[in-house]
Amino acid sequence: MAAGMSKQPGEWKSEFASRGLAFGRAGVWNKTRLGEKKSQGSLLGSPASSASSADDLQQWMSFPVVQAWGFINSGIGTFATPEMVDIALNDHFELARPNFIYSGVSPSPLLFPQMSHLGHAELFEYYIHQLCPRTTASSKGISPFSSLILPFSISASPILFKAIQALGACHLSRGSSSYAALALRLKSETLRDLRARLSSEGVSTCSADPEILIVIMMLCLYEIADKCDHNWTTHLKGAKDLIRIRRQNALVLSKPVEALDPVSDFAEHFFAFQDVMGRTACGEEVLFGSDYWQATDQRIDLWMGCSPELVSILASITEMSRVRRLLDSNAARESFASRAALLEHRLDNLVQEIDGDEDDETLLSAAEAKRLAAVIYLHCALFEASPTTPLVVEYVRKILQIVSRLLEQGALASVTWPVFVAAVELDPGNDVVPSDSGSGRSIVLRALDMMTHSATSNITRTRAVIVQVWQARDQSLLKAPQMPCNDWEWYVAPISTAMTLA
Image (tube, rainbow, N blue to C red; front, side, top):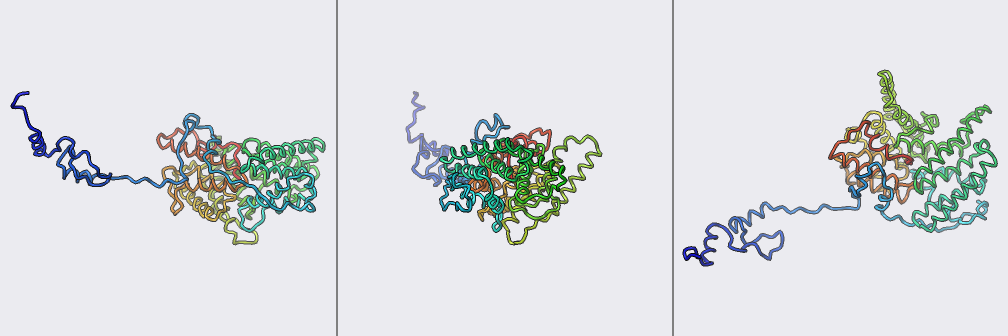
């Protein structure tokens, strides 16, 4: 190297300092902790001013509080097969269910002598003390599953006891797998005995026996609690055929159809309510129409958690939603709009009353949540509303506020349907509930978890459909779908077949 180009290290250092730069690794390596002000210089700018400037601009982000009630899109199936509901995957993410092992004094053999040779008396007691209280939102009233079915069972045949035991074992198997085989065996024996009786006595004779309907009702509840697949609708259709035959026979004998014993009346309303509530989701053809309901009955039913008048309105909305897309003339569309407006007016002015005790706030809250959900359903199914529609936003928040209060009380019986409606019509871009309860999705997930542990129905399927709708709506935030139908038909109905929301 030429002599004129040679410099000593001190000269290099002085030259860098004069230019305001650090020499070598000076200012790079230090032992200060992250977030503390550096005392050394940097590679750019003066040591003091650069460190101060960097600290002024530097912002440290804090981690948000992550709670158990989160929701994310997960799994390639979410995008590859969006039309499929992965029930098993959603069941995997649910919190572990508690064991429903119930021990207590068996029912008196003098009260139920038919059980003396059946065994497993704890299953019948589980039905009495654990299942029956969970079938009503009332904090004071007695469920008809107890007040009607138990007295009727005193004179019933062993087939009904076996059906009740099968239902109890099925519920117990959700927390203890040791009951699974017993539940399946009792169900199989019940089906065998039911078929034998229908074959020996004839369908026409059996249609007049309320015990047959109650047995089918227990089998229906079994399938709902087990997998909530199409099997429960098979029992529903069988009950519909029996009821139709009984009504036809009553007409032939000139016997008023309304003259039903309380057990048969309850059974008919059970099946009709299951049908109406389930078909609000999928929009399929209704089996039990509005003729099963008294359109002016405002008394809140202890099991349904709402008035027959409200159910009558829901049945009408579902029937209208099926014909909405078939309207082929201005006159038909005007008539449709008038009928829809009349249903909206009835919902806005609906009064639901409690027989006797007016202080049953839990039952009143459940009934009001159903009325609010009915308004949302009407606007989405008939008026092209969506989660961003102001009325839907308002009513979803009202429902979630009621659900939040019921969560605090630990009383979520009979609110599956309003939780479902609020969840599937929750705006993903505006998920804030004006309270201290958290986001809308967190309230829904907490409610579903509590119902998973306490409800008599199968909440796993309900949760899976809700999550599927959320995933679809989240994807729509990136790219709006080209919907040839309304919001409810696009997001909810295709994945809600054979659901039970009663």
